[in-house]
Amino acid sequence: MELLQLQYFLAVARLEHMTEAARSLHVTQSSLSKTIGRLEEDLGVPLFDRTGRKLRLNEYGTRFLRRAERALFELEQGKQEIRDVSNPEQGTIELAVTNASTLPTILREFRKQHPHTQFHVQMLTTQEMITLLQRGEADYGLSSPPIHGDDMECQIVFIDPILVAVPEGHRLANRSSAALTELKNESFVGVKKGYLTRDLVDDVCLSAGFAPNYVYEGNEPARLTALVEAGIGIGFIPSTAVNPREHIRYLRIEDHELVREIALLWHRDRYISRAALAFREVVVQYFGALSKQAKSEAGGR
Image 1 (cartoon, helix red, strand yellow):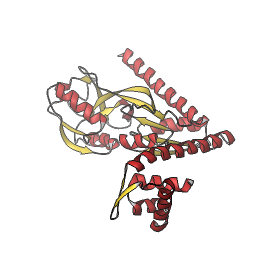
Image 2 (cartoon, rainbow, N blue to C red):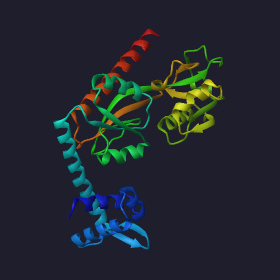
Image 3 (tube, rainbow, N blue to C red):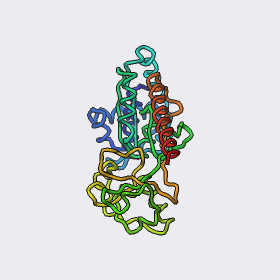
Image 4 (cartoon, rainbow, N blue to C red):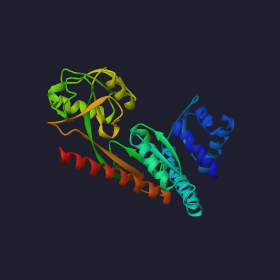
């Protein structure tokens, strides 16, 4: 059994499509098909059920996939460990994030201390992040909500208050806080259903006796403040996404606890390089400073 056979098998198993797998591997479909055939001959069983051009993992394939993923995972961890020991300052940190509002500041702070360490950042859905972490293809995930699993470490780093953003000139713009019931007749801008903040806000508003009237629903959280500033509607914005340069007023919710948890995630068995350990420390320090600042501001009100 060859390493190449395992790599090709993983690609076909994940896509269940020979043409797409060949394209992703940059090999011909004929070469890929022959390699998978030799692997099945070595194992003495078929790994896929074939119906025309369609492939489906069968019971043998499903069982073998778990072992193959584990074997390649361990080999990749070995390569990462050797690179780290031989040249600890020249590595690349792989990051997956579901919301990037705090990331530029964190990366800038880390770069001051580790100028030679590179980053590769992917903005993903929660499920995409879980898949990447489970495969050991990312050092860390920065996620809201937190994700718990048998093979996952989850460290909550910040409790992020969700504020109400209103444009200058709005009837509530001179206030520092508002009750949810004061918002029931407003027009809202927000992300689509399925995003944590949207679902959380909708549930809390329903508990206050109304469903928000959304005039805009999108996939880009960063765009919401521009829409609020333009007077399209008001919006619920996490405190970590507040931009003080915008002509917006942010109000606290008086009568309901409206917060989201931000967590740092990593695979329990993934090798963590010295640079990645240093990055974790910077993340914890950054959010620790934010927490102290928030408590200080709360105490001053």
